[in-house]
Length: 128
Image: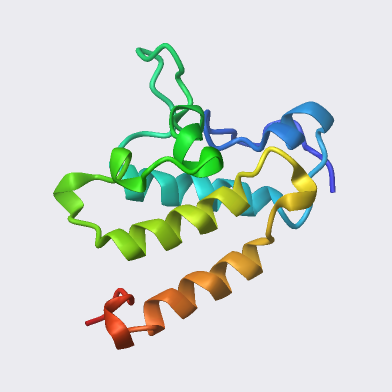
């Protein structure tokens, strides 16, 4: 599938691979889900032109790709349990990975999120 003129594009949600080639695939929508989920995790907008690095994914680079503590980006008001925030950040990192071959599809991400939600045993799930 390729880009059609007039398609709405929201800054910060646009898959860089799509921006370069104009083509989208099974991971393109997943990228947008990753950014949306990153907004939920951090409580911050996907794009903030007042920042030196306006894209949220770039500002969270250390956590998503370099192993920094997820508590440095998670929204403290949301009171994310650390194990859940860590699992969510791993899903996000696979959705927005720089290398498209390393990305998971939208379906794979939804399956992983559903499993996380359903895993209420052992205190790691979202439903208590």
